[in-house]
Amino acid sequence: MCEANVYIVDKEGSEKLLLESVDKVFPTEEGILLENIFSQRKIIKAKIKEMHLVDHRIILEEK
Image 1: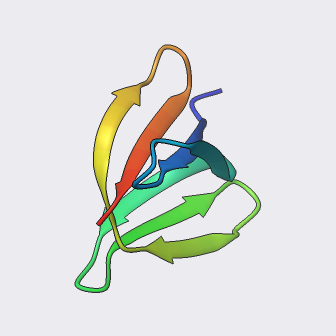
Image 2: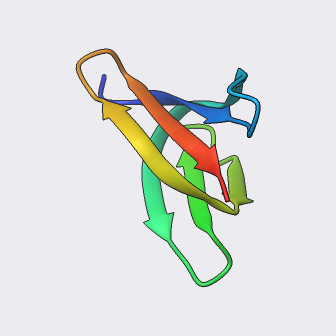
């Protein structure tokens, strides 16, 4: 499987799970669009901080 869990890091440095089993990441005018294998979608105003694809983790940072 090639999905990743997406986490968000807030301004205080706390990390929380945002969406599991994400297989699509799209940059948009509104922010980053995430879509998982269950067709759940989220748009978040953030930037990609780190991607650890071997560990199936994408870490976003709030803007």
